[in-house]
Length: 202
Image (cartoon, rainbow, N blue to C red; front, top):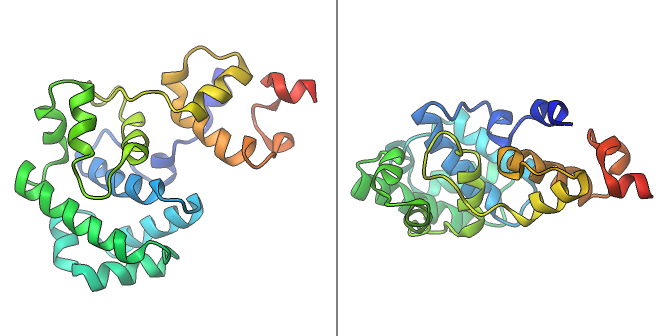
């Protein structure tokens, strides 16, 4: 089962990001903000790739683009429901990161006293709530020593179905299984179907 889980790409990997690289950690922060809204993951992915195509991948470049351009990019990815508010949030995130952390996403982690303080600091950014923080930090476990968010209830639910104890190690993959298979009742297509207690009982 763990071999199958290890082969499931994380969302950051799907986006072509390597979180061992600092520049990709800021990109993942932007992606996490997009994923956190009540919008399909496909639209969030498509919108993030538009940001990559437009090279809007640093705080400075986001500020230089300005609000109107950000709205255009969000709309081009299909992120129309939250385009205005997200453009505003992204500008304020970039400005605060430059103003308080010299534009360095890693400095948030360096300045944080502990995992709780890290989450608090992240949620001080405009439009960044608990969902975005969890999405962002769960893929930084093992990279940032203070990245240790509470395990998502979605991951817990899937882990229980599988009889899996190592939730933190596989959290992002378990959440992905929940969203793409359990939630959509696509048990027959799930790569972990043969390990699932619920699937076997049906």
